[in-house]
Length: 215
Image (cartoon, rainbow, N blue to C red):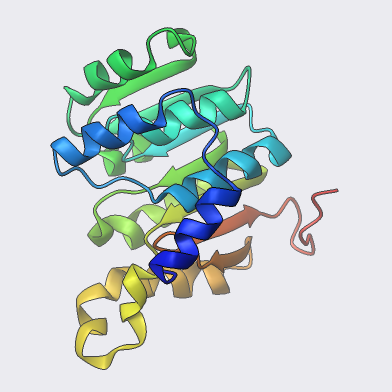
């Protein structure tokens, strides 16, 4: 989202807290696998340290790079990662071995939409990074399964800045719909942060009149 030089500058100031970040990035490069930008991941680690979620659900976890780094940032948290590729669990175990307790990460192979629709659990954080076509479809279930005061966070919501280009905006209508819905839903207090490819951060209000109050 930023000029590359600015992203490099931010990453030099606020690097991802990780014992083996280069290994995760190398795997992503080798397999041409899309992963969260470094500045966005660094922000999530810091935000997790502030809000201290005990339970996190990551929908579209891939091979678990974000989950791994949130485990490092939130000692004692339990993370459930959902991804359609069952082999991604083995990748997570290989790269996280020796750095985190594997019992704190539960991998579910399956479709994120079906998983959260059928779930009976609630979470302090829900992260969304699935096929963008399903963003609007999954929103209501995310809100229902988010604890009051919890955070719903989605990646790629600025989609390289194309949402204000008329010739391309029609191709990203699900992202536009997601952004419109989170901005107008009375149950949420939302902001979009222009780092990485854009992160939306929505807090589920405890009461209708509730506002952001993190302190």
